[in-house]
Length: 421
Image (cartoon, rainbow, N blue to C red):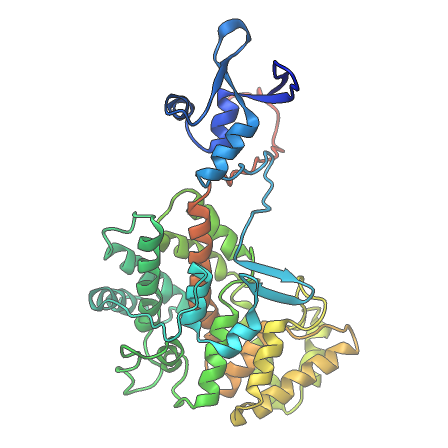
């Protein structure tokens, strides 16, 4: 890159780029830069000495904007990405600029997923699983060992759904969205019902929360409890660049198809510090309910040096807005009164030691304990919900320069040359 004065009156200083630099800025191969020149989209000047050409940097940037290209990520592993999906600011969070908690109160999961994907809110949106894909996913899940967890089943269902889609490598936005609208209900429908006689659950036309309910508990649903589950699904759709979302974007950067993107997200989500954290909160809260008090349960955690699950979040100083929204909705669920009181006692008891507000994991635990769900139910809700967020980030990443997420390793091994072992 060089700065050269432009000849003529009123001249300006022009920053010139080499062919390689122009190609990197445009996200194309060097020969494509010359194709732009031949089409009249770029002008070039022969470099000093006659070796290669140089290009006006402003002209190249203007072409990059017109073609939808963005500046490449800075060298050295800067992982701060441009995104128009989620903003977390001042203890609140927003989906495409709209308060996410308000969306969760007013709209169903499917509608908010469409908002995240397309920027359009489509009332009444429903997702439908293709019959053949759903049957294949159920067969794959049924072949797993009996001790398999819900995330094991979801991973198997994603793999089966991918195998059933011969056009999965089409990364055009509409093709990706079509796959996503079919995949999410397939994931839900592939999970076995908890109770007997629930094989008809998840019929076409049902909201996704209604389809998921019998996969989480044998208890029949009521409207307030279903509203909490739907709100939880909506609130968890995305949360900026969480670990699983970063993994999904890395996969999309390598142009992995959307099913592989979701598989990458599920692999990270299963970690105990991410999606599985809600199970720890469930077990703690269930113990508090069984013992009739949260005080000895909190004391046991403190005595063993373990953090109390379901408290604190690195992105919020006050209470997690997702937890605050779910707690308010749980007030309308009569069977949640005991678990809700125990959760508040956990917060109050811990505050004597360290004032940590509740996070989404504790709110999910109230729902799962109150409604007779297993400890892994919160992780299941998290995984199904976040699938929509991973797809939203994949759509963004597919529009970026391929393989741009390439941090550099800092080598700490022995310096060469070393003797042959």
